[in-house]
Image (cartoon, rainbow, N blue to C red; front, side, top):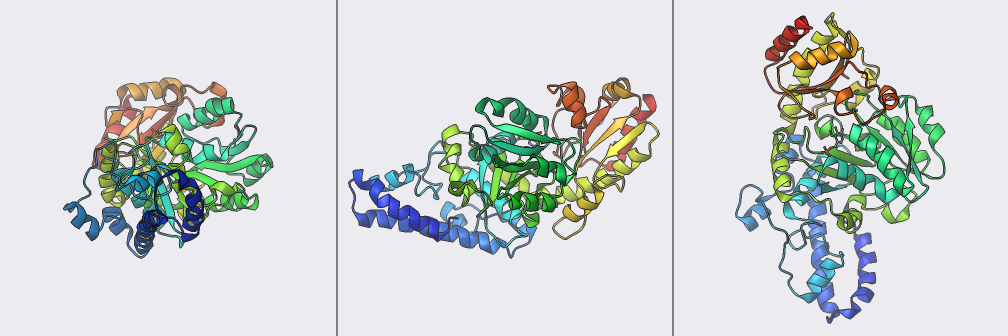
Length: 469
Ligand SMILES: Cc1ncc(COP(=O)(O)O)c(C=O)c1O
């Protein structure tokens, strides 16, 4: 996955670094060459995916005939091991453990890489990269939160800042607001993220990136990725986007100028709700004024922050998510169709004050959603998530939560099951009233993640409950 320039730079440094290992230059050269071949093969495979359909990539990823023959398995096997290996010889081990040839996940320690997370990262990176000529690369993480951590912290030093939409998941809000300031990293929230000048006002010389979540959980703000990436690039900084809710089946942010994409793969990427996971995907070269992380950002994490902090994904979870991606587009299409029917029904209901769903013409960023949210065949679809306000404030919202029996009342979203939650008392309960108000989380808001159940069943259940309250 690494370009040859990177390899050349590395190999000249290596000769010096490996002086303490008893080896001949021939041995080093052999392993470096082998590493280069692995990279070239990967690069070639990734390039080939660019001519393939979304469904072909989501089915096979980069698991091809050669792997099948090598592993004697039609499907990607589970590599449930703490360690790959064995090393071919001391030099091989030395090169691997100095992270110079970690492109071979067969050999390395699972905290750094393993076949399953590696294949998952390549599959998602390939899906995200379908619309752009550049190559993409990824690293899988233990959760969506650790993906956000990995995607952002390499940019930050004490007294640096970054500018973020305040329409972000509650966990992200807490990470940026509570945890990051302890290291001197300051978030500058944008309360009206749809106004580009609000972003511009907050950028200065110490600003290291812009951050958005789009669509946002749970208020469904849709960011103008193009405008924000243009603004970021004018300041030589990257645009980082949490694209969990869209998934690559609906929006491929690199097409619109984003530099780094993160996902919680615990959500729609993994419809069966069986595995927590995350992924960071970057373009081969990103816009940043920090030279050391400009190239191969996601890959470099493996030998840096990711290795040092340890948020690796279990091979077992990676395998589940890899399999789930096979049906991603089909699931996204179906839940989007169901969601639009439900959103239209709720919008007309006399007991509903407001529905937030990007597919509705009443949504404030519907025009942008129409440009950005498209299935791979170009057809518009707007995803599984909506939220709605119940007339009558907190009391009526609680009554809804006490009476609604369809699906499950839990803090989850994006699975194949309908799930819903009252945000002010649960997912966003740790925020202050003021923070909640600023982020658009009213006391009467219900988040509703549409599942694959028959849509008529959902409508009947909603009807029955709304009659009662
Ligand atoms: C948009 C979004 N990003 C990130 C996360 C965090 O993901 P995880 O729970 O996998 O850490 C969530 C969790 O709900 C989310 O909704």
